Amino acid sequence: MNVALWVVQILLALIFLIGGWMKIFMYNKVYEMWPWVKDSPKAFVTFVGCVDLLAGLGVILPQLTGMLPWLTPLAALGASVILTLAVALHIKRKEMKDVIPNLVFLALAVFVTVGRFY
Image: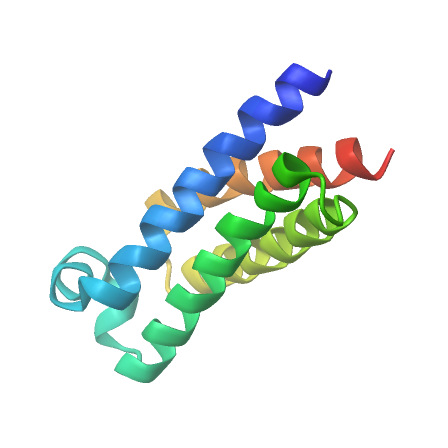
């Protein structure tokens, strides 16, 4: 079980770190790639990118370093909230092709949350 949790944590960290990096430092590219960015203020997209970066670091670093490892499931819980909001946004915008990956990532984040709490 521990190996599965680590694999999922690494995957989630990569997803959040790459997404956050792109939202912060590659705004013009995400502006063209993701339709929701065109309808959102740049400051909001940057904020979401910062939260994504923190989530990516949070799902891996506390457990990896052994320092405050109880923060890992809390970060995964926060990632679950972010992903739930992403699913709601895409459903509201009728972007169903973007709902499925976010639901998969949500399931992975819930898996880490539950797995690391126990």
